[in-house]
Length: 213
Length: 179
Image 1 (tube, rainbow over the protein chains, first blue to last red):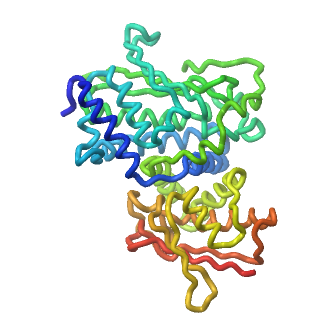
Image 2: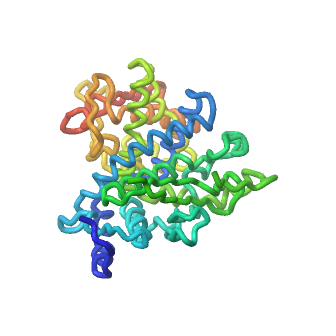
Image 3: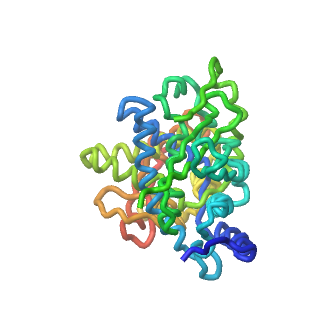
């Protein structure tokens, strides 16, 4: 059972656990994997006839995969046999800490070169009147080499960006976490700003819609 | 959809601000991430195509990744074994054990760990392994080295002989370099 709220002690334990977990995990170059993802998009774009369809197809696959893998990640022991399950909570405010914990566990201390710490917007402060989390992508390994000749962002379908597949990956992980804990929300994650659209940083927004019981 | 649009922007003007490829290259990502981004692609090829076409697409993933990677990673050495050592250390996150076969015609290469096989769903298909893209990767990368006069050879063959993802105790690749 996930606790109602994470205590300072649990957060401290998780802080130690994430370092140990990252140290002991098998790792490979981040750029190698980012390039693999871009090659999959290139391939799907050729197969399905457009960049938009290629990105959408990959996003569909990724979302499903990430929901399934999340449960395994939660069960994996990270600190002396204690799994990430012990560091989950039902309090949405704690998800700022939990999201950060996941980024650290997969990318180590350099995760902050990639994204910022998430910002939590409670429903009453968000324009959609639903709880939201906002992450800024300050450097992007997925589009560092995508020039207009390869992918013209202005020609992508409305609602599709180069990072849509990554937004769906984050969506799947969050959905997996919430389902595991038993919080009844449907997650929607969108890339609302993208370097390819001329912005100085990318932005991903998670929106949590309560599901009907 | 609330994707905000910017009008009249030069898409390529901020390419430097997007990040330093060498920094991303040195950042190490847990192979858990691969479990999200890779097996579903393999299954999608197998579901949508006949076996040979699916295999070709999987092989091409490795081949095409090698072309991306060549842009930011060039080995210091021009010796085959040392190049593989660098691959292992800087790119793949493993060490390769390299032997020459009894006929002295081919290298037998076995990684200590294989990111594409370990912790992945098993793939029980004759002729297709989780780490099959590595065949395409090696061919593509060494082709690029040859084009840039960084490694000399006349012909090269690579083949995955066995794979942990298909139940073997270790992955094993055979590579022939004909000088």
